[in-house]
Structure formats: C-alpha cells, structure tokens
Length: 247
Image (cartoon, rainbow, N blue to C red; front, side, top):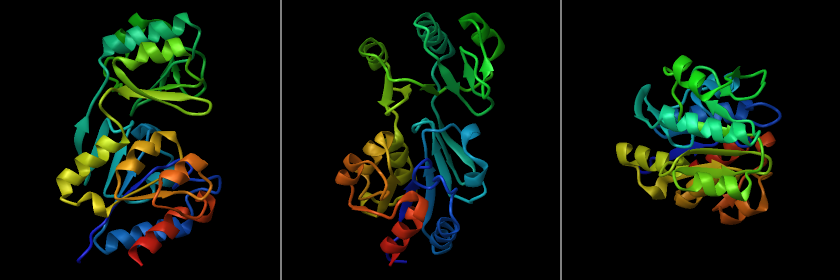
C-alpha cells in the first residue's frame, strides 16, 4: 500500500448523531481497516462513558479523556491522572460556589450534587477515602465557566468551554497530543493523518491533522478551519469522508 491513513474520529456529533452511528459509517470503518488503514476514536468522554452503539465497532485504538488515556491494539500506552488531592481541592472549590462538578472515569462518574448518572460524594475527604482506586483525569462542569473559574483553572489545567458546559484535564494534554502519540508509534505522517470533528474541543486536532474534516452540520467556525466539510453526522458524514479520501 502506497498510502496508509490514520483516521481519528470524534464521537458526539461526528460518528454518533441523533440517528445513532449509522450502518454506512460502520461499513466504511470496517472497509478502511480491512485495507490496512488505522481508525481511532478520539473523544473527550471517559472509556466508561462511551455509548454501547460505538463500542460495538472495532477500532485500532481509543484516545479518551481529552488525550489523557490512550489505548492502542488493546494495550494502554498512556494514562495521565489528576492527583487525588488536587481533585479534592477542585471538588471543594466548585462545591463552595454551588456548581456541579462531575469526575468522569472508567468505573462510575462521581459528582458533588444529586445526579442520577453519578455516585454522589458529599465531601473532599469522602472523595479521597472511598474512591482512591478511581482514575481521575477528566472533569465535566455542566455550566459556562465564569471569568474567575477560568482564571482558577488556567494555571494547571487545559479546559474547553462549550455552549452549555465545560470540560478540563491536566495542562499539556488534548485530543491533539493523543494524535501525536499515535503517529509517533505507527510511523504515519501528518499528511496521512485525518481528523474528523464538529465542536470546540476538536479544534486543536483539526488544525494539527494533515486532512481535517468537519461534519456538514458543524458550527461554521469548525467548517472554516477544515480541509473540507462532509455530509452531516446524521447522514453518515464519517463514511462519506472516508470514501472521499480513499477514493
């Protein structure tokens, strides 16, 4: 094979739409892998939070938690956690300002407020004492960060503000750094690196990739920075893009 590509796919709004994953997407991912190309998930979600519809598909690896957790061929090649004491300090800070704080991990999400999807933790001490075995590398904040909160986080953490929520991990890690690690391991160059996404936390990886693809229903600011726009996610935009690139 003269050209071997590595595809990096965001999940929400890219591979996964309101209609699910889509049979065409599944078929083209399988086709690409059978023909020697590599296909990875690249998501802000934790491994435990990846929808079963996505987990049914076979990938060459997964970059999760904003680049802090990387699996390749079933082996863990990177895991970067926020220290439990730091997590406790963050927990305390957001609790005092009456903000919901969700720690996403591979076992079960933890929250400082009542949440049907999370284990509720009441104090920083309880967090450390009861859940020390939990990995903690990614935090989800279901609101827009204030200027003060952004300043508080900016020294140690990489955060992304979305329209209605924010997420953050340790500074120095992102979807982009996850891609760089995989390219180093596989020997595939940036020219043959394809990133597909639709939102703010995809910008760094889209700007880094040799070929960047926005879903057709993505925000204009995402479409503007990409090599091309595919079909909307709900019309199997991932499949359309893979087909176009592999011709």
